[in-house]
Length: 303
Image (cartoon, rainbow, N blue to C red; front, side):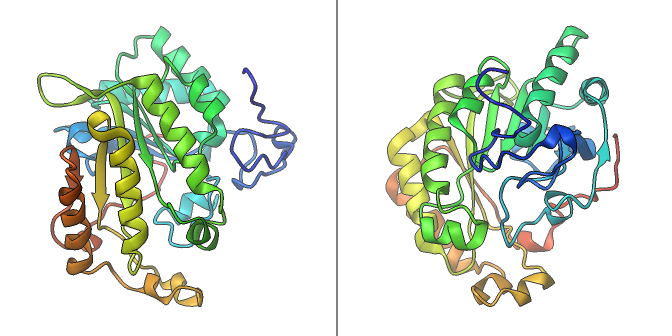
């Protein structure tokens, strides 16, 4: 694959150079063998992605970030996941299509980029016709997004931080704001403006997710302002209040705010701020979503 290599690995901005093909794990905590923790219909994405049946979500093991508050910790830490071949991954895509999935939703696939691209090509050759959703952290190399041009239809990307100090402290990636800006620019360039079908389902486009962290409204407002002033209606914003504190966060003495939920006042404040800027294309969450189960069981279903 042009300009990127899985071993020694330079797929992500870390460029850790791990010999993953020889069994060495990278910063992502996995080697080059594709591992998937779950592949099933997922109804908790944005409405234009989930539809009635659900998005065909494939949850990959490992991650190039180390967010201390990660809600998918069981898989991002490499603890869950079944090793599969590229051929099996292609068949999983086809199985999800047969089950009525609205799309194929690749959840944190960055560190398996070469195998994922190959699997998509195989599946399309066997009749896969669904849009491909690249569900990622925003911490992607611009080169990787260039390679995915013509392969990915929809980017469902996080934009976590505009504050490099916060990014360094909570995700061990002080370069996150710079990397995310470049990646998002390439995403918008490659897939263009949002396109929806007659049922209101997205067929092409970019959705930028931002999870409000308790005590960090300033960072959230900076993200909203940057995305809106840079892209306007060319992207959709998804403002999330579903932050869930876990017991292990009690040990994180650096940021005790993370040990609580986001308050109603905090979330309403950032939504009002988005409206005041003129944001029109946005998804918001209602109610105490931290009580809801947005985190599936990573039990190997569909793998």
